[in-house]
Length: 322
Ligand SMILES: NC(=O)c1ccc[n+]([C@@H]2O[C@H](COP(=O)([O-])OP(=O)(O)OC[C@H]3O[C@@H](n4cnc5c(N)ncnc54)[C@H](OP(=O)(O)O)[C@@H]3O)[C@@H](O)[C@H]2O)c1
Image (tube, rainbow, N blue to C red; front, side, top):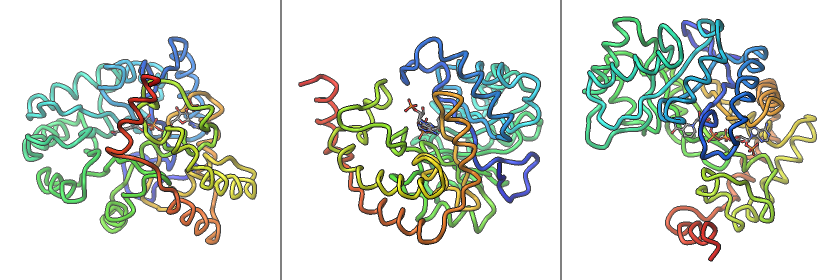
């Protein structure tokens, strides 16, 4: 495993584990998944993974409970990251919700506590007042944000009066927005971009095609899995496979290695089984050659999916079968 080259109380692994899948029906993994989830966590620990990401909203607290129980006594050794879903993130609410998350996780403190998304009405001055109080009493180590643009990330830092260590954003070969300004800022200021959906929710694994789309509500709502887009992704997947073959690796591993080239980026793929976790952890060791990276960039740029409003009627049709 490799770790982020930053001064943090505990090392942060370049590959973390995302746990939205834990206890969340919308992934469609069924009730037996809870046991597998615990095995995934234990294997991740063996492989040197130190970043475990959850949120109070995932399975309405179930993800935090499953993760905390699976970590057991190792909880104190790793970076446990959770998020507040900021419906009304007034300072006392932030504090109360952190206490509840820590209790579900069974930890004395949250190593990283993130604001899940920017609240359109409540300013970060208010939210960060709560975060500062949590840091002052030692219940929260580092503060993070999620789905923030650069301006608001920096505003949050000014409001906190301390570093907001990380911004967790959608970042993968099919969503490269963070390369514009968030990653350069992280590198210049010593912050971290945490890449969520780093495999495009499995799109980049090459496992799915127009005749074989994934099931589960999350991915039925994701336009990348529309038959047209799976079709349009063929070239990109072929390039991933070509690079993967040269490394005796899989397309998913190469898709992760593409992100991890940036020193201040960590990726937190979810996993549906232990073997995926193993492969994802191993991706941290892959070094892409410059020409391989260039080929991946070209293939990623050439991928033009149907997204946004244009995708909505197609998603509805795919769901209703009409
Ligand atoms: N902050 C936010 O707003 C936000 C939003 C979304 C996610 N997140 C966080 O980010 C984490 C990851 O994002 P995500 O789960 O949306 O997407 P992701 O990590 O891109 O995709 C995860 C899915 O990809 C497949 N997969 C994983 N490893 C694989 C491998 N080695 N080979 C082949 N397939 C593999 C698995 O599905 P199958 O095996 O079923 O194909 C798995 O459930 C979440 O768990 C959550 O913690 C945060």
